[in-house]
Image 1 (cartoon, one colour):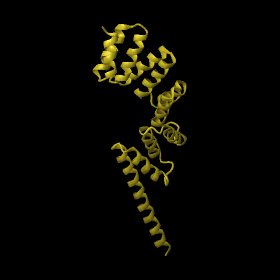
Image 2 (cartoon, one colour; image 1 turned 45 degrees about the vertical axis):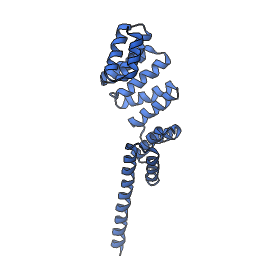
Image 3 (tube, helix red, strand yellow; image 1 turned 30 degrees about the vertical axis):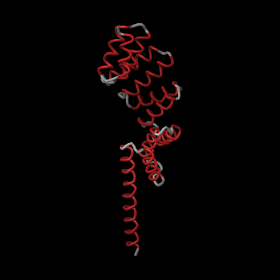
Image 4 (cartoon, one colour; image 1 turned 180 degrees about the vertical axis):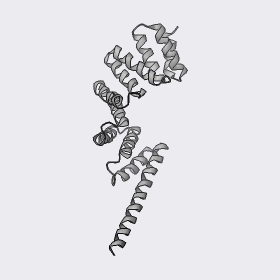
Length: 199
């Protein structure tokens, strides 16, 4: 009898686990299809039984971002970091949250955490550079734009913002070189800047 109860328990756990897996897969598909509100509901259902699932917490946070519920997104990213403080995606998202909130010092803190974990993330250097740029720390901004380009020489935004920084520093030749590279990489903003500064 004990063996039978044990077997039933194991089968129930397998079925329950398979159902949970289906829920999170469904949520991922909804997210990919841009059905963010439905994805949020599906991730929430999954998290009700697995509240510390990092992937689902992070993806629900991203879905909240997409629908403009930024505080809920921040709470999910913070929940991820409470479980794994070195999570690159959550740190990057927290940096973006503080950047968009115009708290550039806090943003830099999170971008630095990304760089400490994986020093090759071009986006972290780009956004750290933009944060320093906003704070008027032009040398730091340029150094970070340089690093963003060093790790991804097709990072159009890094060329664009480094070009904008060079415009501010009256380095017109270097500025136009960067802006033209950004334009070649598909930046529409660079097109306007070239028309204005690169006669």
